Amino acid sequence: MPTSSFTSASSAVPCPVVESLDAILPEEPLLMMGAGPVPIPAAVAKANAIVINHLGGTMVKVIGQVKSMARYVFQTNSKWVLGVAGPGSAAMEMAISNLAWEGTRVLSIKNGFFSERMAEMGRRVGARVSTLDVADRAVASLEEIAEAIRRERPEIVTVVQGETSNTVWNYHLKEIAELAKAAGALVIVDAVCTLSTMPLEMDAWGIDAVITGGQKGLSSIPGVSLIAFSDAAWERVKGRTAPNAHWCLDASLAENFWHNAGYHYTAPVSGVLALHEALRLVCAETLEKRFARHLKCSLALQDGVAAMGLRLYTPEACRLNSVVGIEVPDGFSPADVCSHISRMHQVEISGSFGLPIVRVGQMGEQCREHNLFRTVHALGRTMVDLGVKVDLPAGVAALERGLSGAR
Ligand SMILES: *Cc1c(COP(=O)(O)O)cnc(C)c1O
Image (cartoon, rainbow, N blue to C red; front, side, top):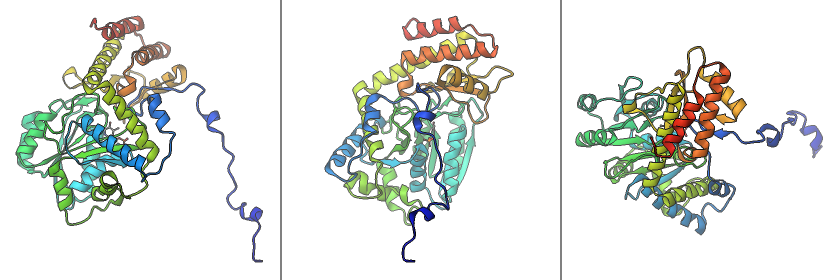
């Protein structure tokens, strides 16, 4: 028989019966107040619904604007800004896999889960990675870092600006970069959660590669990320002899698309358009005002949580403002709190990789007064519902004092 019938061919793997998204998604979207992804502005959502030619003249113009806006957000004049189709971790792997290879000496300042990921990526490209293991809820002193640099003589130092997992802020990033630079090492900074929420000056602080994702501080969608290399870092990328084993993440190939209007792989056009809008909104607001908004909102949230009677996880000196860690009361797990607040109050917050905390994000659109009132109220009511003694009115009052500048 030369032809087979369509009906007999369709029986081997039967067509599944599935529900429509309308049936799966809640009627009212949950308020995304966890450690990312975060709510997106309407302009970002609108851009994300558009598909255009990834190589046409419109795209060339969009890419040019994305790069120039990204230079402002990274605070760099370096030409070498690129995007990547993938999560923040893809940008991280792009930094590591282009700058490190077999035998490269990498010193990884390890504050927690995400800074350890950079070390692991280094090991996987064959680098000789040493870690400076920092205690939970603390940062390494500059003396410890200087000593580790003397001991390990790294070609590359990796450090996270905000360790989202345990909500620690590496507040002396500038000094760390200075120490590394003085020892002739390149510095890679993970700014996935912090970029555009707090100062980071790539050029002025002498940083050689900065990475970020879309779905955190920038309030874009997940899946399209950004990286910037300094001239010195780019020279190292171009000077390597063995090509990067990660073809998709090869910065020299990515240069084709991000700088020469050519083809590398089909760019995630909708996500790039969304990122364009997210960056445009950052520029419209200005970094100064955006940092001030984030600081005010996060401190007001912290005041509200503390006034309610809950404990903040990280000491004030190294507390990350972009993601706030809150201790879970004895007898409860983070999952108890997260599932109750989601189910009963339609607010999503995060647990944290085995730590006894829940985390509330303060990134991008999360830092809006109405979102904070709803979140503090929902968190307080969750505690009341679970039988934990808290003073919810005191929490809301402290939040209001912080937001109205009466702190
Ligand atoms: C979220 C996060 C990452 C990972 O980003 P993905 O988009 O999940 O890959 C890396 N580093 C930090 C500091 C983060 O907050």
